[in-house]
Image 1 (spheres, rainbow, N blue to C red):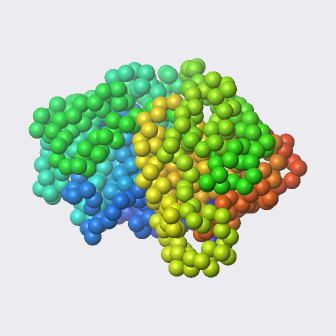
Image 2 (spheres, rainbow, N blue to C red):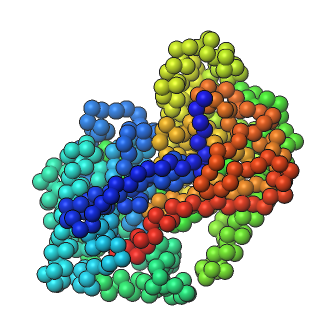
Length: 560
């Protein structure tokens, strides 16, 4: 019987030893930096993993021998912009979307190569970014640039990569023209993307959220620390020329997506798809919450679409109170820690058109929150196997069982949907999710939550059918610059008999396991396994914070 994956499951991976004294090992060091290692099977964002298989493209519609899609050649997306403008956030978000579609994409953060070259704890010379830098600084800069670009060409030429995202400041027009010519010699099309910000409020928020975790700013007022950081960057990078090169292909994203300017972006379909995505995204901070719908009256069925039971109605009330209390506590905690005393972000609720999800959202609607119905968020269609037992399915459809066990993500039973079908159906929802600027609560069936969670946390297609969302937990995902962060919030006071998990044998698309016994969670690295005893009724909301922030602690003062 296959093991179900929960967010706390940890996958141990060995990390090869690297020698920082060997000039030739720079790329190896960068590739083995913390962001590039898989620390957990599902609970830590895998966007910077170096995949060893092709299971990272949930919504890919077709494949080719070369691995390149949309009749497009190789593309280098070159980021442009000063620090604290959201370049890394945009790079990561864009890579997440393109990889979701099946486009082989990799991000090359120049800061990783700088750190690998100078060594952890060391900094570049003061004049490193100056146009009239000393010969030693120029040599160091060229060495770092050369190694990064060699890896870009190796990815595009020898690993059948299609899109390379080059995340760096790229401050001068002369340097950008030279870079475009260099890529053209390698038959690589270049698309520049500048994040231009002159809104002081956005700059301060970006600096507060990403940059001022450095010890240099300890015990300082966050607003003053943000101003000091921005002044430092203005001194370190004295020359910056905004994009105005008429001959280059570029997009200028102004003030986190308030305006866009396009120049010569007309070379292929994929480029237009990238532009379309960028018009639907932003770099403002907000949280996304996932929660199951309450238990239905009688047997939960795809065809029946039954209303909530009494236990389901009580669940919706307790869940609502828990989430609202959590949001208030988090807001108060941010202010107590020196954050700006700004109003709490609004909360928008999305649900499917199924009766259960609508009634689960009623508790929010009664409190004045906006509730929007999304027809694409209906649960996966189990087809003719919905009410059949596992024994009956194995007897009636033995060939289908074999196919499903080989590939549970892409296989569909007769008259059913596969998880791949569901992922393609949810693409409009993903674009709306990227566009949403309020905090967002998604109430849906577990199959829908699996796919949306997998998008935000970059899970493998082999993991998606195995993800579990117990009803006594709210999953919170917070977008961050380098990788998304997730946490679990326990919903207290629920009878364990009303909190069923997924079917134990998830290879078979049987209905949910019902109210008899919950599926026990595996032992987790992030929280102890829950004990289904009377004490769970009084258990306080429990936040289980992702430790992924530790993996990027050395990146918080990036100037690249």
